Image (cartoon, rainbow, N blue to C red):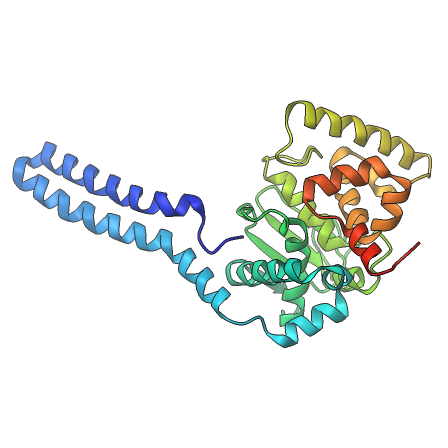
Length: 301
């Protein structure tokens, strides 16, 4: 993510200009020259207010990036997040910048949970892990992250839940629900191909297309068809019990994509060795090569 979006650079002054022109035209049509003058003033004021509002995000981002990344945050991530530890310094710098922007803009709300800086970092790290390789990507589809005190049932109940079998859930309107114990567990074991944060934010990528279809957003035509064929082959392999991925990924294409993302970042070396084609597809898609970063650390299966 960047301090200023390319679209904001031209859209804010353009929108202000349209407001001025529209106000002048409407006032002139209704009341002649005096109305045009009044419309110019009203349109100018509205345009100024709109430009200020549109540029507020840029100012917020610049303030966030101007603040040095807290050393205690860095130490916490080094201790808790293997993916952060494996990154080269230049990737870490990008990761830390995106974290600051994400935390400055996104709403993270506790439901029966005290939202600490540590929990906010775990949520943000889950999202930024997916997008750090895309400098212009924005999490515009995210409306709020709700942190629950425990796993929940289909009616989103924690207390008196009938069957609390859900650690996370993503809604088409952009809300993500995460169970805090499951989120923390996801960071406790970096090699088990289970990470509820990565899983749910992968679903949110799907929402970028307004529906869940399991095709990574941005792929179309031949690339989308190639992914669909690869996913079908890997899902069948999952059903036969011959996969690194969590078996939940065999249920439908959307779940396969989310589980594949978990394995790519959590069990990178195993995925590359046993699912070379899938690993290569995700490496090219995310612009990251976590298995190679593990090679550089001298890790082996």
